[in-house]
Length: 169
Image 1: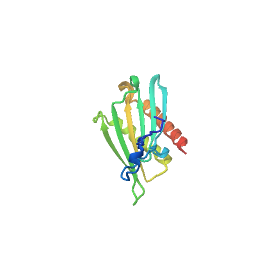
Image 2 (image 1 turned 60 degrees about the vertical axis):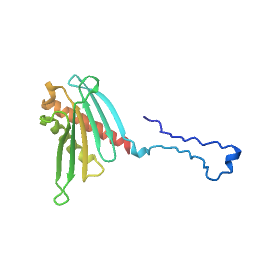
Image 3 (image 1 turned 90 degrees about the vertical axis):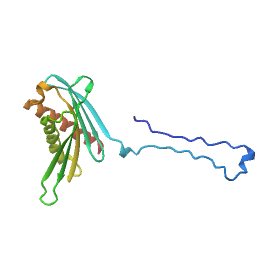
Image 4 (image 1 turned 180 degrees about the vertical axis):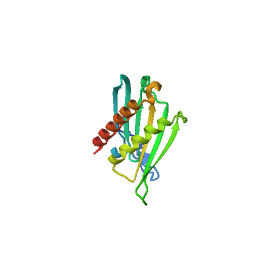
């Protein structure tokens, strides 16, 4: 929601008799608005990948990147996979941790999508010592493990995340 949130507390109107009462205080009015920096930068696009309608969305937060890809009707998502990349301070190698947060835990291909996406985004990220990506993903089963589908989906996701990063600057 792009509107600011405003909370108003009404000021009590006091009659002349109660104005002399020093314990009666007017209620202050507050204007509460989120800082623009605390709101995510978001992009949403639709593609046809190998003639399959595919919805992609990206949300950039201060501490993570949320990426979604769905080839299901209505953009539904059934799996959430988190990938955390951290640079080892001793030998400067990047270590990846992939966790299935929700959905098909036995499907290793979903983790591969998240890891490869994170690996390709790391050079574009401002803070290169760590990166956390949450991937929401639902692809058509018949093409999910297809090498061409894998490369194309990951390339589209990286392109959209980098484009969204450019909007933030």
